[in-house]
Each structure stands twice: as C-alpha cells, then as structure tokens.
Image (cartoon, rainbow, N blue to C red; front, top):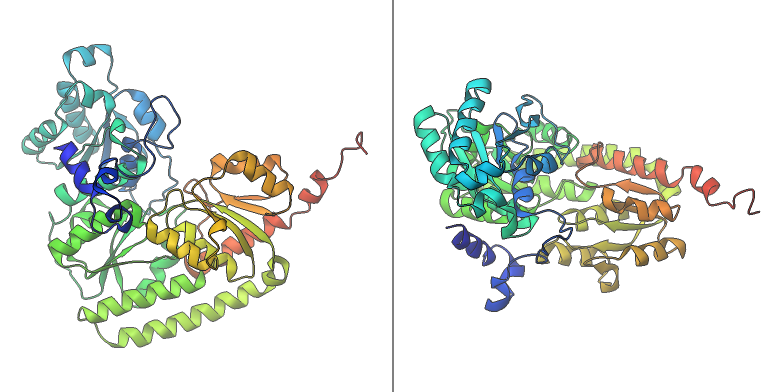
Length: 459
C-alpha cells in the first residue's frame, strides 16, 4: 500500500515538474535520490515529522530506536499559542529484542500509556526504518488502539528509506487527508473561513498576518500545521478557500481537498510587501466568488493601502543604507522567489538564488524576479564557489539556513538566518520591516570592517 501511495504522489497532477517528466523519470521519484550512509538533508520520516509536529495538542509517538526521535525532535522553531504537548518527545525506543520478536505489542502499550497520562485528543504514530523492515503493521495497531481506547490514533507510514524529506512532507499530508480532515463537523461554519497550507508558525509568524485577516472579518479555520489543534485540522474541510504557502510540500493535499470538498486553492506568499498585498487580494477574491459579502474587496484594498503606507514609511530610513547592496539568497521552496521580491523592494540586488528545494513554478517565479538571468539560479552552490563569491566581492551578504553560515563567516561576510531554525518572524508587513532592520543591523555592523583588517602582527 505504501509503495502504491508513493507512486501516486510521483504523478501528482498539481505538480508541473512531475507532469513534465517522462514515465521512466517519474518512477524515480522527486528530489535527489538518497545515498545510504551519506548526509541526505533529511529522510522521509524526518519530513513527515516536521510537517505534522506543529499540531500542538496531540501526542507525536515515534515507533523506532530512540535516535529517530532524538534527531527529529523540535527541529523547526514552531511556536504555540496554547498547548505545549507537541514539545514532548515520545518514542517506543526499540531495542535488539524488539527487532527479534517484533515491536507491535510495545507500540500498543506505548499508545495506551500516552493516552492515560496525557489525555490527548489524538495520537500520531510515526513509522521508521526499523519498524518497517521487520514488518510491524503500524496501521493495524493504530486501528485496534482507536477502537479499544476511543481516541483517534493516526498512523503516519513514512519510514526514512522510502525517499526524501519532501516526500515525507507529502506523506504527512496524506495521513491528514486520510485519517483526520473531515472527521469533525463544527457548528460555527462561516462564509469567510480559510485554511493556510504549508505554514508552520516559524518564530510565531502567524501572529504577523493573522491579525490582518481578522481585521477583514476572515477567520483562519486552520493553519496546516502551524499552531494547529487536532479539531481544527479535522474541521478544515469546511473552509471556503485554501492558500498554499509551500506547494512542494502540500500541493497534493490542496488538490485532494479541492476534488473532495470543492475548496479552491491558490499559491501565495506573505514575504514582502507586494506579495502580502497580492495574497490578501487573492483570498478576498476567492471568498467573494464563494458567496462572501462583496464589500470584502473594498475593505481589503483599504487595509492594504493603510498597511503599505505605514510599512513604506518605516522602511524609508533603511533604503539609503541598503540600496545596491548585493545579497546571495541560499534557501529553497517558496522563499526562493518570495524573499527576492522583499529585498528588491528596498533597492538591494540579489546576485543569486538557490532553487534546490523548489518546484518548477517556484523556479519560474524566481527567474522572472531576477530579470530572466538564468545564471543567477542554481540547484546548489559548492562551498568553494560560495566562498569565492564573497572574497571577490560578488556578494556582500548571505541569507540562508544554519548549515551554510560557516562559509560566509569564514569569508568574513555578514550572514542572516532565513530558514526554519530562526527566532525572528519575517512575515507580512511588520515582518518585512523587521527583516530589513535585521539585514541593516548585520550588513552595516562595524565589526566586519574590523575583522577584515590585517592583524597587528601582519601589518
């Protein structure tokens, strides 16, 4: 069943990149094939875990050796406005004897113990390589536990060896669609309810655009999965529109919700002033087309005008300090194109952007915003080439994840964290102002001039 599900994901109609492949290439799957023993940038299990762990009030139980949970726990800095149960690590801690005799009984006991101690609305059980290789039937155990304990126990069958982190994201979405979404019917359905897919509330970014929606009378029924509650996800089928922030991860979920529940979707971004405004307009348009009050369009434009004017006034002092400064953007997914727009809006020049974790649509948008210069796009940049760009002055700063920071710092170049481990939110109008403020603090810090000078004994 897992093999069949994976093959279905490889022919995803909502992914233009997959549809453009030949039948033979499509069977090979998405992303770079994994090499056993090599650093792969996240396995399938890791992708499923980080996609679902931001559901804050459920138990996330990993069926495997303790290292699987230890290495995947809390890797994304997702905030919660309520329950902190998602921050606890749960694992069956499989040992040698469990591998010999099977781990199904141990898993069942772990589920029972977690429910008795924490009384969660649901338990998510993650299959790992070890459990899958010895043949533990996680689906059967979860079904039995659900029937006997009266608490939904959701199997997430995404062992690490079946593919990449991106495939794990999508298998996590499959688990939500198959076992969770549509299982609860709320009594407060409204004409302006929306879901946001692929938003994980990194550094609390939901609080930077959720108030904007509230001012327009738009209710965020569910963010999948940032700061979500189990019943929120179970009620997500009642929304009138879906916004997809990261299509590479959850485009399949968006498509299936449209086919099953008739919920239209679009891909947008809350990074940058223009992109935030475009996203608000698209949400309002879809809701009005779905039967919401037509005055929503006018109110949306009024809000956009007010917030844009306020944001540009706050950004004005930074423009002269940042105009023409060269930035290398080394990230992926939606940020590969959305952050480009944000930087260009204050006059900075993006000299390159990585699209190694981006869809074909993401790459096309990045290319358009870079003026059609294909030389500025790269799947990956080697540390040697990256170091040369900094030393030769082709880039004055880098925005990336933590794993790339040491190349920039070795070249004595400013670096700012833009990925999931960061502790500062950069979404919507206020987030854009904060991101530019952080860039200004970093790139214009006098420490860089000092560290680039020859040491006293070299002068």
